Image 1 (cartoon, rainbow, N blue to C red):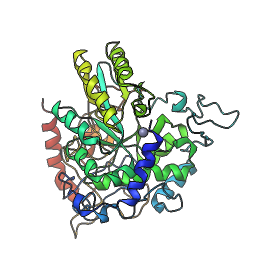
Image 2 (cartoon, protein in one colour):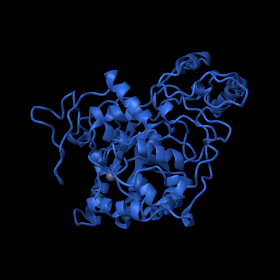
Image 3 (spheres, rainbow, N blue to C red):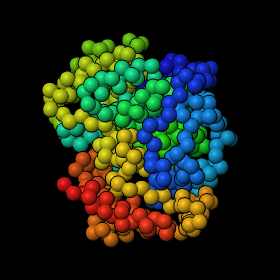
Image 4 (cartoon, rainbow, N blue to C red):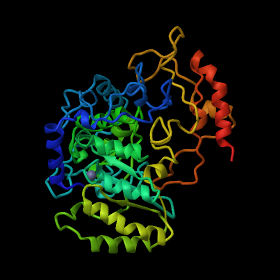
Length: 443
Ligand SMILES: [Zn+2]
């Protein structure tokens, strides 16, 4: 959820207050300068593949170069990168994007679909109507409290970060694109403190009310800005504003950008603290009830870093999380079995679970590359499949997550897939890669 006035508050800042050099932040822990690898298991990887110098020369966060080229407000669906549009068209043609009609929205009321369309039916499965698609994440594993905050970065973000650091906690921050542009300092503080960065769209609309190109812009620009602001990390998770998603929106997020959807199973309504929609006492009572209740399923509570009051509500509830014996953990880490970006383990570590990253797009000069620079979604020479490499190493692939509940005890098996052997240059690193993989699996 998001109070409308905060959005209006933040938007003018995005356009009226250009980032200045007073607030620029060099990215202190980018992905490895020599290479990073994005597993070739998803078309999104080609949309964000490395260009020469990528991972080395990102513009400082907050600088004019960093913000140039990004929309200052609602993205224009006619000014999207051609690669994104081509990917969408290909996915539609392949039947991967369900033809669900757009909903319409009256402020303060849930979006509605045209007459005769069942929002809870299998064709639509609207999260607003609490239809739980099996690939969406609504629950944490038993005994776990999935920590996450929406709508940042904002002026009260540092207060939250300080509290999390004092308590040695990490959270997932579902961030709004225009807020990242408006508050680069707060963004960098979040990333540098090790917070997991996830997407919360560019301007926080009801996503099911948008057409396909508008959905594309909301998600694409957010992922691109997060990538450019985190040394190349591509977000793996997103949360729809107001929890408003359906099969069409979900498919665009997943098929085009590789974004997996995280929702929640309890709502504090803390976004309405400033307008009298709830009180600290009400939130505290709710938290007390949820945290003293059954631990199956685990909790994912909707909370915001949008005001001093909402941050304070979490701080006041935090002792209850501990005293009731919950394991608090960043919800993206729970959902991703510890891997919170598509191409990196987390914000602090520059490597995925493999230990070594190999990018088959970037090779030393003079070394033939097997991968062309075209924007084709299917590389002409695909690297060995993940399962092939898994078999080579005698491992089996474990799907991440199971149904709409998280499986915290899943064995991480991403590592072996990263030992890519597609290029001559890559092969020279294979032995090191396998060695590190084995060592990293050592107890
Ligand atoms: Zn929100």
